[in-house]
Image 1: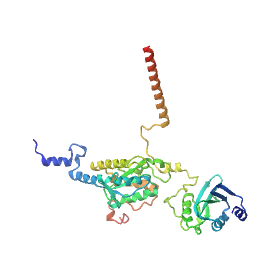
Image 2: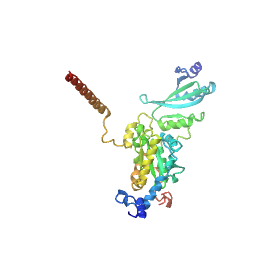
Image 3: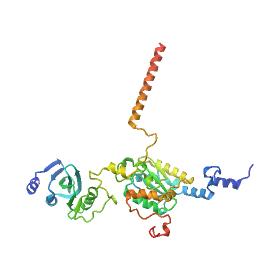
Image 4: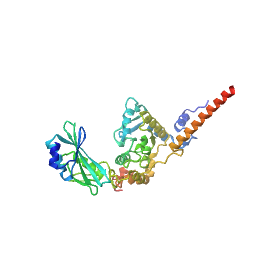
Length: 190
Length: 208
């Protein structure tokens, strides 16, 4: 199988990640050809997931298509890189129906435009107008601090670390005082 | 010996005339007493706290002995339980449901997520303080609260209702602009339909 893929797609980039997981990286224009080949000629029939990794330093997204065999014992991970700016990709939903909702999810969370997908409506975020939340330039904490209000802490709220230190010191001092008193008592008794 | 049969009865109904609640008349007292004895809880759960509600209502903890039982639709319910974290998408549904409930209505908030975000304190998609968006009558803290705590919260709520203090629904009507502003800040301008206390007179508040 490896030889066939290597010769057919002119790539050496096949890794054996685990006993049950192979990974191949391929250019985006030949991706669907490879997926079709894996599905038709080999046993990798099921599209398990489409995942996206944000490589913000390199300036691209890594899209991974996970294909699983029918006995669910082996997975082939087909990865391709797409540009981060105006990210777009052709849809796989014509070949695999389950790709439709996976692509919809990726569109919502990363802002990737899947050309040909009929329904890219938002799935769990409604009326979201900010940066797609799973892109790494989206600063979650800043967003939360700007949009939502937190309850003010209790008036007797203390910093845990400082308080623990103080309590430990107090405990130590009390123990020492007790020991001193005991020693003194023993001396007096003598 | 004083002969005060009827007066004694009247006194029992009205309570101590020198107490804080003495301004309430006996009808109010009775109404509150009835309300507190039969609490219909909307069959609706958000977040992980929903899993604590079946044991509360079924035979082991048996909330029905306290007059607490389920209601199928918001129009028949007295209490809505917001059980746990509440994302924007859920909040929109909760607001819609709450506004459909008839007065008097009460909100019981479970778990630390409704108090201050809980473990979702830095989530972009979860509200932190429920009382900014809905008037909360009673908080039950814990992550998650056990059925015992939920029952305790219910009993505390019953006491408030009996004393006529659970008036958060009035607060919602009086400060509607405040709540609406907060709701729109997270949900966008599309929070429909517009809440109107006389909704049944108009076309859902659109053709007022």
